[in-house]
Picture 1 (cartoon, rainbow, N blue to C red):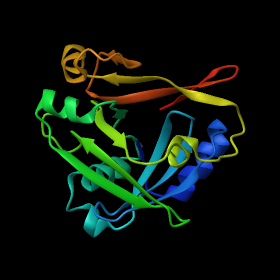
Picture 2: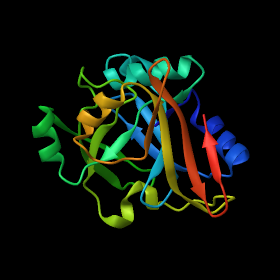
Picture 3: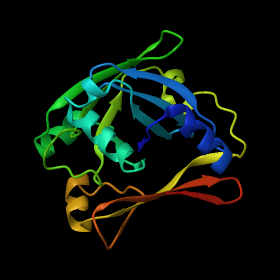
Picture 4: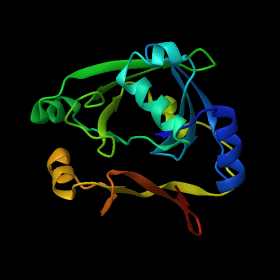
Length: 200
C-alpha cells in the first residue's frame, strides 16, 4: 500500500513516471479512505488516500494513511495473502476482521484480514489478508493499460528486524529484503518483461 494525498495525482505520477496504469478501486467507508489499484496479475499495488479526514482520524489505519501522506506520501504497509488465514491468526493470536469496498461499477469486494491493527505489528511488517471474491474480481486482475509489460512485484525492501519478521511470517518465504537503518518500508521492485522498476 502506497499512501498519497490525492489519488488522481498519484495515478498520473505512476503512469508517467513508471508506465503503470491504475483503476479506480472504491471507498473504505469505515476507515475514511479510498484507493486506486495498480493491477499486476496475482499481486497489485494499492494507492490509498484519506478522503474523509474526520473518519480516518478515528481509526488506526486511517490515521496511518493521513500521517504517511502528510509526510509526502510513500510506502505505508504490506499485505500478504494467507492461504489459511485462520491458521495464521491462531499461530500469532490475532483477531480476524472483515472489510469491504464497493467499486464504481457497484460490485462489492469482501475480504478478511488479521494483524492490520495489532499493536505487535510494525508498519514495515505485513498484515495478512484473504479475499472473498471470485477470481475475476481479484484486484490484481483488473484491466489496466500499462505502458509496459508488468509481471508482478519482484521484491520489497524494508528496514527492520529480520528475525522478528521471520517469526511473524512463521517461516513463510516472501520476497522481502531486510536492510539496516531506521525501521520502515523503503522501496518496491516491479518486474517487467525486460527490466525492474524501482518505486521509492
